[in-house]
Structures are given as C-alpha cells and as structure tokens.
Image (cartoon, rainbow, N blue to C red):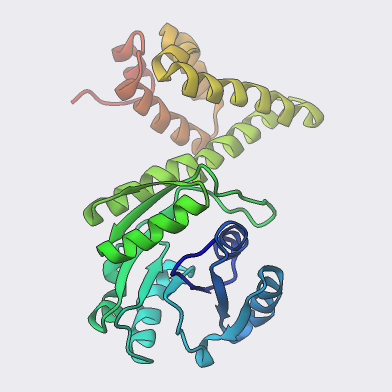
Length: 283
C-alpha cells in the first residue's frame, strides 16, 4: 500500500506491540521501534517480528514522519521536553496514547513545529492476551494534521474513531475505567462472594461466565432497562437487607455504590425503601 507515512513507535510494551504488529501487516508503515536501554531487547524482538529497525532512545534520530509515544502517562511530559531539545520537529507528527491526558502534554514538541495529537484506543491490553484492534474505537484530540494521520492509521486497522474535546479527556478515561478495571473489580468481588457462599471452585467461574455473558449480550441487544432483573427490579427489600448483613465491609461498600447507581439509572421498584435499606440518607 503506498502512503506518505513512516512510523516510529516509542515503547515496545503491550500497546506498542499491538500497534506495530497490526499496522505493519495492514499498512506497512512501521520503520523503527525505540526503547530505553532497559527495554531494548524487547524492542529488538518486536522490530525483527515486523521487519523494522530497533534503536535506543538516547541515540534514536526520530527522523520518521510520525512518532507515536506508547509510554506511561507519567513519562509523557518529560519525554516531550527531552525530544523537543533533540532536534527540529517542523513538519513532523507526534502522537501519544493517554486516555486521560490531552495533546497539550506534547506542547514542547508543538512549539518546535510538530503537529501533535492524543490517540487513545478504548481497549484493554492484558499481558497474556492478544488484542486485535479491528473494531476498536479510538478517541482523537489535537492538531488537524496529526488527527488526519491518526485517522489514516486507524482506518487501515479497521478501527473506528471520533474527535473528543480535550476538556472531556478525563471523563472519557473514567468511562473506560468502568468498562475494564472496575468491571474486573466487580467480577473479582463476585468471585470472592461466591467462594464464601460455598460454590464449588470447579464450578465458580463457569457459573459466573454464563450469567455475565448473558447479561452483557442482553445489554447490547436489548438495552439496560430491558435487561435489568433481580431484587432491585422487583423491589425485594427484605432480600436486599439480608445481602447487606451477609456481606463483609469491603463487599458491602461496593454493593451500596452499585445499588445507588441502579437507583439513579435503572427502573428500581420501591426505591425509597431500598435507599433506607442501604443506609442512604434522603436529600
């Protein structure tokens, strides 16, 4: 495929690896994998896999059209400052993939002439999982030239994209937190409760998987209200009180937080009685 982009990926971690392998396969644009000295072995292995070169950060030339920073949020500001001191960036494009931080983290590079953007995939990247980016939604924010380059790469990976206002990035990241780490937190909390209830270990995950899969399928097919079942939908206050008594303090706090959300967003019967049962004071 002919195009005008050649790409340097900084960071051979889970996101950098997913981008490098999938972009190289569908767009053939990955030129260089850059890593700190401590991670250069990973960069070399990834570069060999995608037929690119590997360079250490301190000696890399960053001469590619696009540099994509796949590094922790806490490292972005210092990395941008360091890169800005290394060379002239006029005509170059620099991207980062923070969900919470805006393109302003790359302001030192913008001041040196680069077009910059944040490009965040709404996806989880677990260490032992292979994550496909086709169908993933990417949030784009930043300079028009950088956004256009990001769109081309997202399109090549068969992803979806939208432009987000920079002031909404933190809320967008919280949205993602409910979809992965906090969803996982709900599942592990349920796992602990199920074990305490005496569900046999060999059946515990099977029991969870079946009901969770059906609930998720119902939500995306029917919507939240049509999928909502259980004691909250029925207004079974006596059962809710028993739940509150049986749960340990950590589990009870999580339960109360989720019940409050159900009261706000879903068709709960006997809402006032349930509020009293979970100890929520009337406002």
